[in-house]
Length: 439
Image 1 (cartoon, one colour):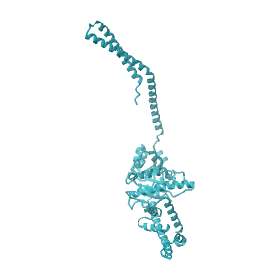
Image 2: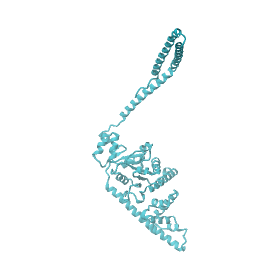
Image 3: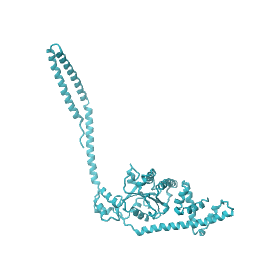
Image 4: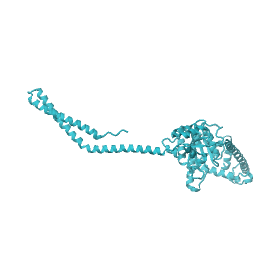
């Protein structure tokens, strides 16, 4: 850093030049005086007189300028002192900052690796909360193609008992995300935007409910996986709003997101200009090649060597080493559990529909085709044994439909999302919806 130029030095040089110029003009004036007296009348004498007068006036003007410069010397001296103080302060603060950074830089060695090793990333993530099993942060999973992002998420889901899962994957197929029920997998970009709009509505609804109920409020935690988030962000402004709203306000309403991407830049995450949101609201997981790139960026040579020793099962969580062996048997079990649950879910609803529709049909026959206004009473009169223990579920479904309607959700959304019927089972769900709402 160069020392600031001194105004006093420049002024001194200017004064020297001015003084020399004033003396020169004075000498010229005095020399011209005898020449004027000795010259005969004519042009030479007039020229000498003109030069003499001009030199005299110039001398007077330059002398006045010199006095003005002298008057400003005091002010310029203060400016010089302020600049010098600022310059020395910048030098000292830079040295202090450098010293502090050197002191605070952790010593990366084998002991550091042992002290900071994470053996269960799921427990680590859940522990970011207040100890109630609810995490404080969302998830940011960074990995290249083939680095195991989907496998990691499945392993994560296997340990989150009682959670709901949803995925948005515009590059996905029906063969992907088997651990998530089919009706909670969204592939088309227009459907993703629509579903995210519903998510924002649900977020506001849960926030309002929690505000009204207070500490007694509770609901099912939900983790929504946004696969290849940069592709979603570039497609709609709704996605950016979805990311920011959930990152800032989704934790307490138990609506968490897992942003999956190939890099962690704020632009790709839809939070450009707000890096603090990424750093404070997300637990960051770096897998495979992205973990090694992160270690290089951190300047952590022991961590980089540790990652290279074993390419599978080792990665980085919040800039700390993590070694976690994924149990493929456990993943198979969770997928099977989801599939089994879906089969029971549909079969139970099928039985209930038959029971309800048969009862409703009997009532309607008695009224010669006129819809009975007490059909709901007929449905509610079904005993638990008559529907194989399904009576409580029917009431729960009615309550869920009413809550969804109060949120302003469409009938299609209620059938696919709330009741869980989509694809070839949609008409079955529509029939159940009509019966439960007495339509």
